Image (cartoon, rainbow, N blue to C red; front, top):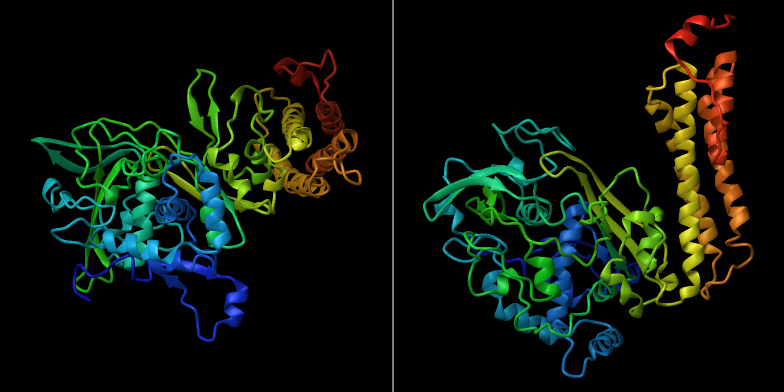
Length: 537
């Protein structure tokens, strides 16, 4: 395969999982990977993407939403303002229009080459070959975020920069997306533009964030549900993806302003990349990775994030936290004004209309627990059962139940954390002791049970939002979460209750589970420690 022939439209670059009924009726083996054309043409036969890395999955979905909107004719509201009706018409047809899919990829075929020396490789900047020092490339280990490079730790495998293993073209394609959306801030390869050389990049638009996506019974449903209605002012001919634009962006000027949902979700990259293929164009031998705009950061806009407000009044996306279960975000996904205190979370815009596609949609959360710069911790993938039928727009009577369920679960989680830390400080007679080990063990015992309790009670809510068969009884729900907190507290603190000092500390701190403390708790000071003798035996 000569250089310049690996085209994402035709080459099997996206891993997929086929629907079971399609597998059963198909006479031959179905491919594990497909090109973008077959992905859209057969989206109704595909159950879901099979992308293992969460950030690559989230990034690819945004690309596919933009493609779906274009081929389905859903890039603007139109003179009649009938975008919702036109989406339902596509849904009723049961598949994306084949003629439009073929026409689109025919028009832009030259922009989907992964490697295109002398041309426009997809989502890359060919100018980097001249603007970056050829001896200062990033290397393939840095391109693949799950590999160690430099002083970074190993994730799934051990690699060395002295003998790197070239990634395949499909692997490099997904890693390219991860860099565009989740690339770190900090020093990168130097890039010289207009005689000025700099080597500092800004963090990608989704870095540290957790994104939420409606998910249907097929990829076709998922893509239609994931479309965001364009604003009335959006013109489809102006709301373009990077590969559809005639010219490459000017790195010495401010970033282009988004013109609608398609550009908002595909033109936000703060990094510029260029992949260098091997002789056969089946693998990547090296890569340039550098900054896209000098000293400029795009406004963080995205319709798949929960946006919150800091105490200083700044808007920021809810961060990805590997220790936080998805049920704790459910009220912010279903409710327009969730009861979440000063953070004032805002429902992701996509969930305002996704339920129009189906009431049986699930929610899939995809993210990357990481810091703003180099440190990456853990991928996050989580999903719910079918919940969007309970969205506030669908039936506002679900509001009190969903919000209170989450609030009560978190209330007793916080009380448990405070109680075990106070018990430890009382036991060791050191007010500054943080009790982190006890708190971690207590949380590991409480949160899985709280999640099961939440879903058990959530499922008892009927579709009208009424309480069904004891589903949401505030008093009973409070007792259930309290019982879980008590059990976790007792299990963690039991080893020290065999001493008088330990039993006293545990007994006093236990009151925190009930939201109270004695008015005059005994102070622990060095002098009192000296006067107290620990019993033996």
